[in-house]
Length: 259
Ligand code: IPE
Ligand code: IPE
Ligand code: MG
Image 1 (cartoon, rainbow, N blue to C red):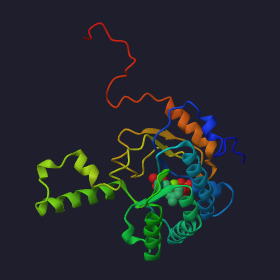
Image 2: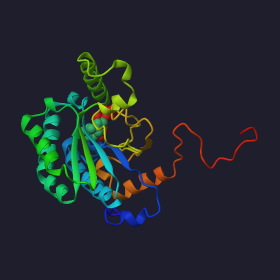
Image 3: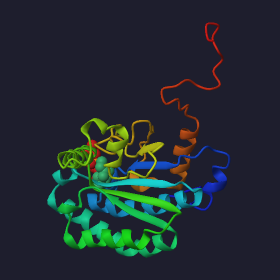
Image 4: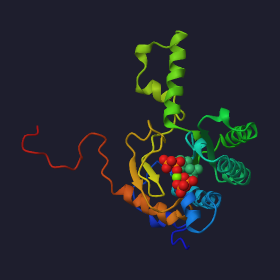
């Protein structure tokens, strides 16, 4: 299928449009994409890698600061063992193929989620990719693997409770900032734009804390069919949203009773 807006053209296409600083994506619909073509589900996961590549490249061109992609949830262990094996193998081989190119592109890679239950060889690759790209500044690419928002918050609570038990922090001093500091990405700004492909309209335990004020964008497009054109449409929709963060619109006329 042709994509009228390639990664190189997206900058012109979105000229003058307000861009999100941080985009978070639930890449959903791989299995259905494959089934619609009479193929096994894993073929959809393989095809989805090309969408990852073009979205990462487009975000780099646009100057988006951070892109967080949901690759494997803490609930995805409920899938058949064969599918889990394919997903882990695909993750490993994609890292092997892409990390040096991402490094050249100035991408800083980070992984969030519980690594302890991943294969040790895969854990080593995640550590190596993070170490290699740690000094890069063009785009923060955050991959959520064996990640769940509830897992993240429970881990943060455990960490703060342990520090309090050691007498290092006062429980009374635990505020939103302290909790944020114990989460996975203390230094990243919250996602401005949340995109979910594949037609479902739910968070599926993704970034529960960080998405508090994200603009939500759902599309029926299945992840392997999501490319730069679809990303441009999502960003255009985002730029038309009126973000108030609980306040009022600055341009709203004062009502007669206002001071
Ligand atoms: C998303 O596609 C990929 C992962 C969850 C790893 P799915 O595999 O969930 O595809 P559908 O939703 O079944 O079509
Ligand atoms: C969410 O998709 C997880 C990822 C995209 C990695 P799922 O397909 O697992 O979500 P549910 O099961 O439909 O909520
Ligand atoms: Mg799904």
